Image (cartoon, rainbow, N blue to C red):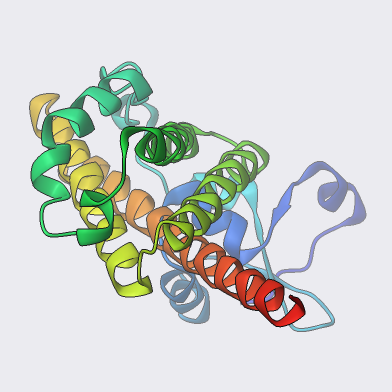
Length: 227
């Protein structure tokens, strides 16, 4: 549904892209486009055919203030706590991943460091209240994920095994968030939005990780061809 706005309103209102609007409320672009097409969410269509959503309209889709989810930090889910969770389950999660088992301590520490950066940035992303803050957190997380992929390639990790290790990280991360939601008594809407937001973010990081792995292999191949 296309809305007409006065110049004064347009200046006062903040208009969001589909991606920014989805990041703000934790739904997929397909879902938001479907709501818009059905007339459930008002949108402005640019001359180029791109939808723009008023920030106030998108925020109106969130639960009322009394039901707004507390931040993960307030719920006790800090990067330090997430790191401790990973350490407790790391051995079991990495079981069967041969390239990880063959790495020495000096090779494992950089991977752990990037894993901590990914987890910490994800928590910041989930708690961010503005598109700018979310983009900054996601940029940092994607950088760490790409470097993780490069390190895995250097450590002789096949792409299949690298993805498998990341999916185990994904399972631990989402499992911990689900535990937090249950322990703290979040309602269904809050819990669902939390897990959907986290899942969508992690899926983006998987793409970044694979890109880093491919880049490292391509760089190595170029060096061999040039030698």
